[in-house]
Length: 209
Image 1 (spheres, rainbow, N blue to C red):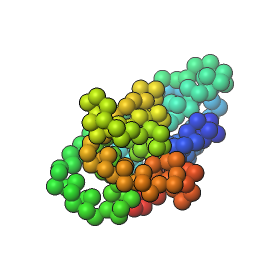
Image 2: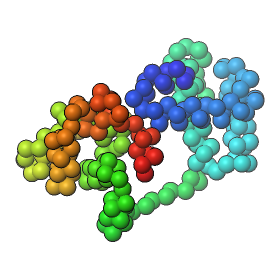
Image 3: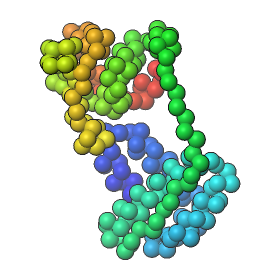
Image 4: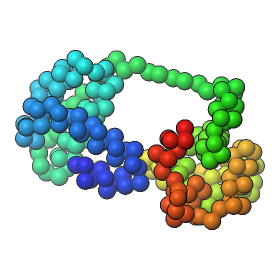
């Protein structure tokens, strides 16, 4: 299962890390760890939920259940089991919404080092996910006005799903940030890492943040 995740999400280290961590957590529950795949049923899963809910909230438990569900569905696809058991997520997750005000945005950008400020400015103005942004190449950027995109546009070719592939209009600020980077760039990537041949890692931006 983890080998498959590492291959299919090779360009998403955060996703790989998520599944590795949740799988380790699942395997700390001995009845699950020692069970044959075809013996993992709704009753065993419910015992796992009862055990975990004694120490963690619904959100943490649901992330583990989602990992188990994906693993068992792959086992079904690979004909290791006849049918994956039904796994129901828990209710009661707290929905946390934060709205960034213009004043807070200005304070944050003022405190950012230059690279993080460029990344944050483009993300804020386009709504790009971090993975989409870091996979951008200069061939995906157009600075010429096109239709309603009077400051240029950005084409997303790599995303979470096929629907993630789209073209977005740039704002004046995002266009200016990208244009300044383009004049100095020696890489095919808009935000290169230590080597110009690869994009910067999300973890590197996390450290800057």
